[in-house]
Length: 599
Image (cartoon, rainbow, N blue to C red; front, side):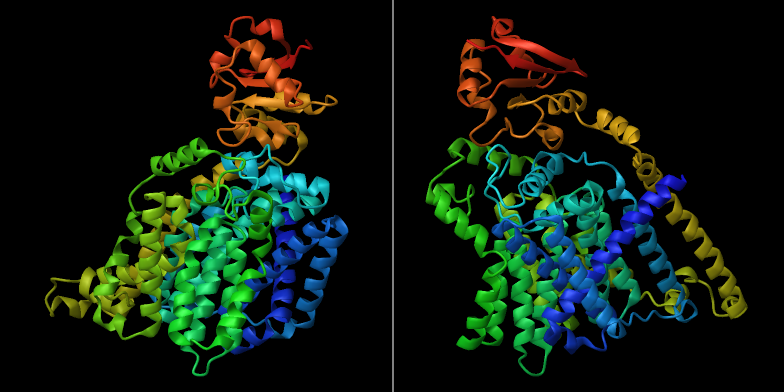
C-alpha cells in the first residue's frame, strides 16, 4: 500500500510541477489577456494554465520539427515555465468560500461533485491498455521520442493526422512514463471541470447549477480519464477558446488580446484533431458579427494558423491532401483508398447512439424567455445548437465525437436541470418540496433546530450514497495500479493480447513483423509492425492470399515475421501448406509468431 501511495504521490508531484510550468508560460505569453481577469481568480487560473498548455505544445512542435525533441529541451522548457510561475507567485490567489457560509444544497452539490471527481482520481494509474492509446496514440509518441523528431510512421494508423496533443505524450515518455501520459490527458479533463464550474457560476450565480454542470461533464467522460487519448485535450482548448470569445463579446471596449487568445486555443485544437476544424466557422462568424474590421481578421486568422499550419501544410505537400486521409474523395487518396474511407464511415455510423440523457434538458433552455435577454446565453446556445447539428450530420451520433462540445453543452444542460428542479435554494427547496401539504399550524413545529437536524441527517445520508457510488470504481482503479515490474508484467499479460509473444520478439534482433488481430497491442510490439484495417498494410489485401503468396508478399515488404491472433483470424494458419512457408517461433495465450522461411 505504501509503495502505491508513493507511486501516486510522485506522479501527482510531477503533474503539479507541469501545471506550474504551464501557468508560468501562460502568464508571460498571454499577460494582456490574463490581466483583464484580476478579480476572477479561479477562472483566471484555469485559463492561464490552458494558455500555457498550448504554449508548451507549440514549443514541443517546434522542437520536434527541428529534430531536438530530447530530455534536455523538455526539461529546459518546464524549468523556464516554473521560473516564471515562481516570479509571478504573488498573482496566484485562489480564494475559497468558507464551508459554513454555504447553503445546505450547495454543500450537497459540492459533495456530489467531489464524489464524481474522486472516481477519476486513480483512473490514470494503470499501465497502458486502452484500445486507441496502444494502437496509435502512444506508438506515434514513442516513435518520436526514440527518433528525437517528427516522423511519418506509415505502419501505424492515421500517420498523417495532426498530432499536437500526442507531442505531450512524447515529452511524458522522455522524462516520465506512460502513466504520466495518462495524467496529461486527465489534466485536460480536470481543467475542464474548473472552467465549466466557473463559467456556469458566472452565467447563473448558482453554485448548485455550477456543480451540476461539472458533474454532467465528469459522468459523460468518466471512461476517458484512464488513457492517453486526445478528446479531452481538444475539449479543453475548444472550451478555452469559447470562454475567451465570450469575454471578448462582453468587454465594453474591443480588446484584441481576447480574440487572439481565443483563436490561438482554437488553432491548438485544430492541430490536435481534424474534428476541431468544424468549430472554426462558428468562431469566425461570432468574430465577424462583433467586429468586421480587417485589422481584427488580420490578427485572428494568422494566430489561428500558427499552432496547426505545419500539419496541414505537410500533408498538402507530401500527399496532396491537407486533411489526409479524410479529404481523399476531394483531393485523391495516398495511403488510403476508397474502400478504407467507406469502412471508416461505416465504423462511425456503427457507433451511433442517442444524445446522452443528461443533456436532454439543454433543449429546454432556448424556451426560457429570460435566457434570450442575456448575450452570454445567446452565444452559448448558438454554439451548442451548431455543435449538435454538425456532430449528428458528420458522425451520425457517435457520442465520443461530441466530447469537444460537451463542456458548453453541460453548462446549458445544467440551466435546463435548474428549471426542471425549480428553485434549489435551501429554504425554498425544503418548504416547497419536503414540507408540501402540511398545514400552517403543523409547520409551526418545524423550527430552525429541527431543520438543522434534518439537514445533518440528509448530509450524512448523501455522504454514504456518494461514497457508495465512487468507492467501488476507486477500489478497482487501486487494484490495477502496478508499481513493480512484476506487477506491471502481470497486468499487461492479462490485458494485452499476445503481450508475452510481443515482448519476446522485442528481445530478438532484426524483427520486422506483420500482425493479424493485434492492432490493440501495437505499443508493446517491435517497431515497425504492419497490419491494420486501413492503409497500405490493410488486412483485406493479405488475408485471402495463399500461404505461398502471403509469404512472398510479406518478404517483398522487407518483413520476416508473421504474428497471428488465432481467435480473431483462424483462417490464416489454416491455409494449405502454411507450415511449408512459415516456421513457429513462439506461441502463448492464443497468439503465435512465425518466421517466414527463406525461398
